[in-house]
Image (tube, rainbow, N blue to C red; front, side, top):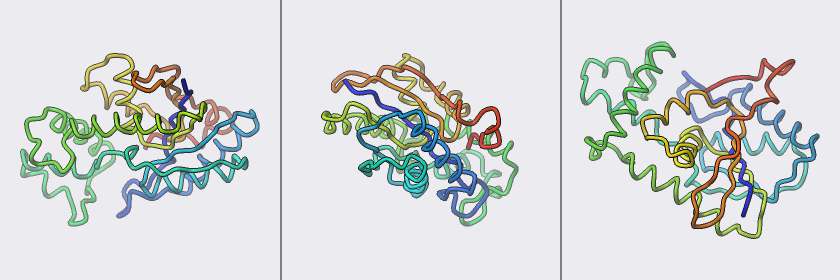
Length: 230
């Protein structure tokens, strides 16, 4: 049985043409996390990361702070779902929303408005009624996250595994561990802190067992300026 620590990537670049890019704050968050875990002498056998740019950059920043030698494995199964594609698909139901997007897919509305529309778009995606409109339907995403966990079985010689991933896979895994309905995924996701830690016990052929969710003591107190949620 392995202790798997899922780490949410650092703050990405919301509102920029390339969201998949850590902000300066995002780099600082992961470097600080690595330094804190190093000072606590928390040991990991290996570091797994998703294949997105923000996952790679988060891993690099984490290792700058952690300093201990650690092999890194890239596993795209841990990638986030395409939130922009899910968002834009909502315009198929509501043509008036099309004007909210520029040609590069960047919404021309406030962050608060984006969040409300995003929750509605995810509900539509999860319904399964419009699967042909998505490159990755909801059930395919669910299967991919399951495959991400199964891929850890190949690392059975490692008992303490760190994984840098995104809010979607963390929230989905939490739902599965607690037997929660899919509609609750975004309620969990919206509360996940950048650089937060969620711990699971994992044994191949069994569902991950949640131990802790969204640990973020490292961004409290005098480090509260490092706290962010996107």
